[in-house]
Amino acid sequence: MSKQQKRYMLPEEEIPRYWYNIQADMANKPLPPLNPATKQPLKAEDLYPIFAKELSRQELDQTTTWVEIPEEVREMYKYYRSTPLVRAYALEKAIGTPAHIYFKNESVSPIGSHKLNSALAQAYYCKQEGITNITTETGAGQWGAALAYAAKVFGLEAAVYQVKISYEQKPYRRSIMQTFGAQVTASPSMSTRAGKDILTAHPNYQGSLGTAISEAVELAMQTPNCRYTLGSVLNHVALHQTIIGLEAEKQMELAGEYPDTIIACFGGGSNFGGLAFPFMRHKILEGKQIRFIAAEPASCPKLTRGKFEYDFGDEVGYTPLLPMYTLGHNFEPAHIHAGGLRYHGAGTIVSQLYKDGLMEAVDIQQLESFEAGCLFAQMEGIIPAPESCHAIAATIHEAKKCAETGEEKVILFNLSGHGLIDMASYDKYLAGDLTNYTLTDEEIQRNLDAVEAVL
Ligand SMILES: *Cc1c(COP(=O)(O)O)cnc(C)c1O
Image (cartoon, rainbow, N blue to C red):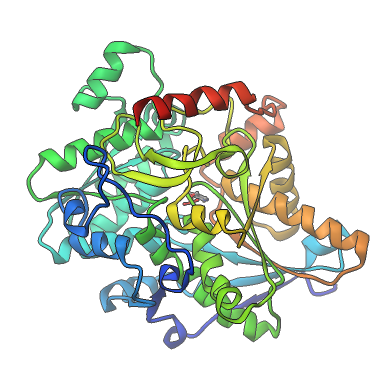
């Protein structure tokens, strides 16, 4: 039998000791977040009521290139890191491509995705600052699960608002969070003003990430010693995720190759930034020719069809105004969509990089993503998270182009998580119950007009 898979691992002492802050190297820094009332740029202090102080500082830090990973966090990373870098020979063969396909396997973390990389850091800083309770929201449930475990590790109480439709449709994610000791509430709930207001206006509302964020932020602001945490979008989250790309840099060296194309799926940008930023450093500083491709769902196309403007991070408007590619904070994702990645906006760093042409974006249809995921599962033996399937579809697309041109490109993509708790989505796909969904221009424009009316 020919070689099917090759894994590259790092010894413990090679696990990075610093995260990489790409803001320090960017020629055009991200625009500052604004206070929605005064429209003035925020200072770190303005974020202290919501986030841990150190995380607030990291959020706005545009000068420190390397941020030391606290020893306690690095010790926890050793539970599952380094994660494997894998050469996917069987997938290459199935596609018939001369391209070399590598993936970074973040699905081996205890909760099955990259999200734990930031959850551990956020819980650690909260603990350091004497915070006792943390809140958050979760859509599909991966972030909630990561935060629930991280809170337990550092001795904090976690309260998670889970988008109602996923609370009902993904009961196992709720049980995972509860097993780790978190308190889980379906959002919208009657426990916050934001939740009550929305339920009064729309009693059957199935919830959205934007609403759940509003509820979690409200609880954090009204509870002593309580702070809010977020699993994507923000700069400090992408910072913590750079552990992925920093490891991958060393592992690609072990493999004796250097990537031409780097691909990741795109929700708010944290797994994309995590893998891409350390390599983008080479593009910014040394002019390396690398393509970076963010793969987003056609049903939530904020980069490919959204608009760059200041918008809120949540539904109600509790968060600062962020300069980002957005579909509008009122964006309500289509219920038919099974693949996650439904947040309305892109992180501010990625938004600036995209605006400056340092990276590309593609949108992927739902059926194509699952088709790619099934092929990957059959060839590599790992069932990918529906989110990760978007990266796989984009990878297959690039690899097929290489098959046509004969180019031996090196493609690296992020396997952000496994799909073993998402089998209900695979079931729907296999039963033929999923359809493609593309937003109309009118739908997109209506939401963006609503944003401008508010600002
Ligand atoms: C949350 C999640 C994503 C999307 O979030 P990003 O911040 O864009 O990375 C992608 N894949 C998996 C498995 C996730 O859990």
